[in-house]
Length: 140
Image (cartoon, rainbow, N blue to C red; front, side, top):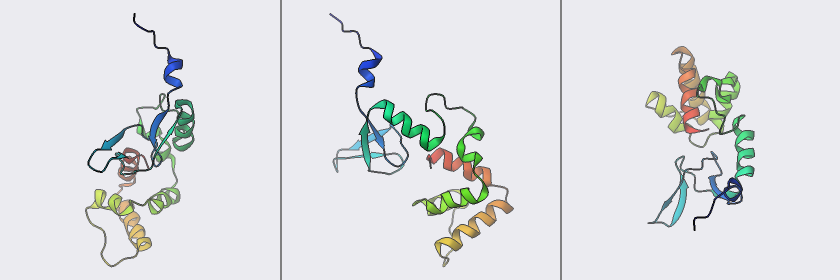
């Protein structure tokens, strides 16, 4: 006899998610016996789907299932220049963000100076939307 699976059964099963970007795409590395996310985070947590959906909406400003395909409507594209600069500055992967857009980080500069030079170049090259698209893709 085949059992009928209801959505309530699924809702009562915990989901594993990344504590950093809230992705549900959690992978396991057998060699080191550790779970990890695409973003590189190994802080993997578990909760019920309803709780995860609330966390996702709080972080990204929209529900996961009703996410618009137009990334220009995403919260990252609504950030002011200073908020965008702060987001990059607060990101532990800031050097990688600079490399992905310009290929090199200025040598001999502090983190703060590197970010200021980076944003200056972004403005001059009219690439702020390229940065926003990258941050959106990285789920930062």
